[in-house]
Length: 130
Image (cartoon, rainbow, N blue to C red; front, side, top):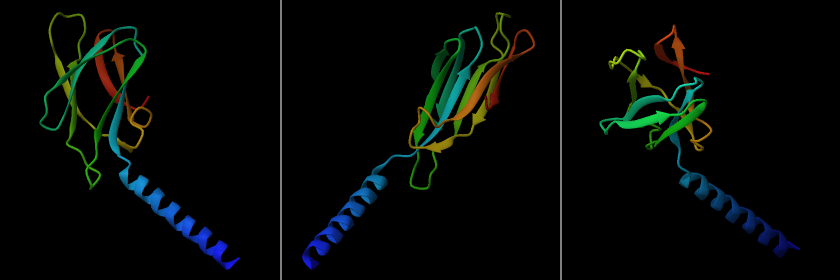
């Protein structure tokens, strides 16, 4: 009976070590979700840190997820977005802002939400939240 208890205890210790190892290997991300609740395709560019701008076309009524691995201090380079904030005028009027992220291990479901909205007929803005 004592041998059986010792084996069970050893098994639990090994299981605990395996779970800790898997948890340590899980990657955390800084993530955002950009929402387009409008009936128009929206175009924007996004970049992390000193990287290149990435062009994105966001179809009507869809979301786009962006995520970046966190370092050992739970940080990533700053995240920026830019877009044309006045539609239909044939010109590019840039609006840009810094985006804050949520820490998540599931970047396609746990990002900080941002939503594009028209204020007025042609003015486009980006808001935190839904």
